[in-house]
Image 1 (cartoon, rainbow, N blue to C red):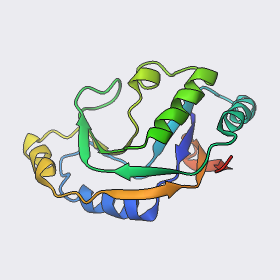
Image 2 (spheres, helix red, strand yellow):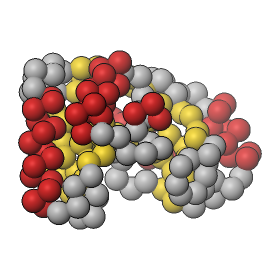
Image 3 (tube, rainbow, N blue to C red):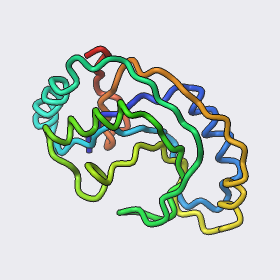
Image 4 (tube, rainbow, N blue to C red):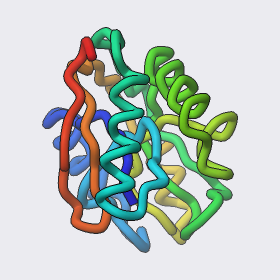
Length: 169
């Protein structure tokens, strides 16, 4: 599966590693942090080439934008995979607008995009200890902000960045 992502800066990766310490009992930790703007339906490299061109056209003129991570939250009932999902909440009207533009042009992946889209950075899944979740709720979280100056295409099968879109696009 391919996606268009916001690259996650080092300060966020560092904070995520610090937050993982209290997450004992998590079934799956996220080793590679990601902030998905739009999942792509392409299944082959040829389909990806066509779809990535459509994404670039949709992004044309998109200026750099701000992202803010204000707190830790959970999805108690995710559409797939172990629950709960523990994540860093993302505040950014610009990322939501860009997502909506891309969905209008390319369609939405059912249950996770369009009206269901919640921008976030997953820390882990499947925590079986409610006390740890309560500890996270009490954990002091200093918000992180940064300016997004490029987007990247991600190949989840190979776990590698395969292209980028500089902003303004």
